[in-house]
Image (cartoon, rainbow, N blue to C red; front, side):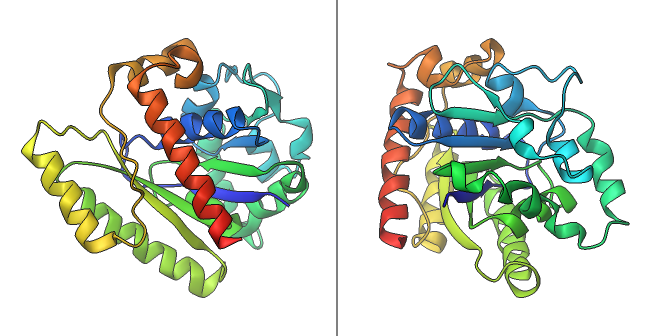
Length: 257
């Protein structure tokens, strides 16, 4: 039975989608079967893995709103063992449509239930908000992975997200775990990055991964070519760091198991 990990942070531009794509590709390179489920209307995980989001074919919207079997939506990527459930702007309307749906918080759990046994890991790329789409992802996930950019408002945003996780545990998903917190866009040359990293370590040492993802031009370039960093530039610092993160991730999962 696979493990569903929601990759979430309500702040945009924190490396959430980059982490979803890169971690997924690294886990696949290590022989794990991985599905990236794109739940962000921007569809960046979809295009970042080279899949079309032009509105042709079914997407995560159909699985969430129309009850379409997700196994018929999933597409292969150019990376062995890595598949994508694509998304596009149709998901914008899902937040509104879900309001009137019975048990609206459990749509993603129902959608993923049929494919969960086929994968070792399902990484759900959440939108940069704490709306119904993110609530759906957290309600259906086994754990949540939180990328945090090393910048001024990081801790404030983390507090809001952790409070949301507590509420999800109380009312919708008692088994939801915090998989871990990943520092992204770290730049050791700036005093701010160092200070923010130290502050997060002070408050969240239990959850913080030792692997830190540095700010990287190559990581920023890779999605525009529809490639994960492991394919775009496998020898880059970003690729090496995400491979280290994958190793640490697997080590943590093994201990929890």
